[in-house]
Image (cartoon, rainbow, N blue to C red; front, side):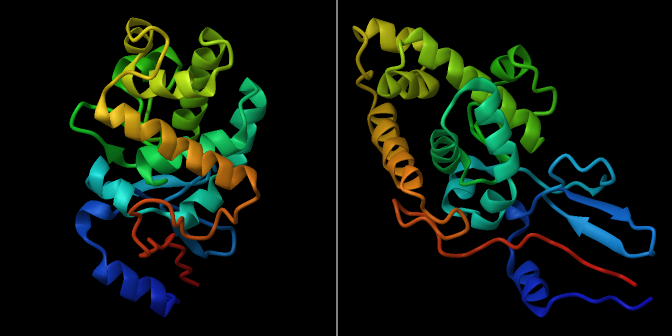
Length: 223
């Protein structure tokens, strides 16, 4: 059986640290071609064939993944339309939360692209928080709820997304004085304004400390 694999993908995968990999999905087409990817995008033909370690959130944020960002835009757009949230805002939150790495996990237990805590994931119907479609839909629903709760104040909604609604309320409806939250809100806002301006979603983000390394989307054909 002949394998046709792009040289860049092979080299990148060889250099890729194990902790930065994502689960691999596959399906065989009617013509016998085997398709592999780490972003199935809700395509029901794909089946999980290999599980790989989840990514510590600090690594995920540093290993910003512009290819996955571009591939996931249909999910982002659909969720944005469903819940009335700006797609630019969703892209900004995902960039800061996980660098568009669906396997991101935090020491506190937040999971996936929008870093959902287990209770939040269950509340908004994400049975598999590492599934991009479920995670983005649930995270968008949660963000929409926070925007409603804080009367459309984007800064307070983002602060609540990071630190919790009670922290914002206890701070007198201001951004809580936590260093993480004080840094989080302006970072998300910077990306939000960037994406609102029509920034190329497949291009590396210059804001902050994101790595210029691009994780490949695996697509292997085996005729």
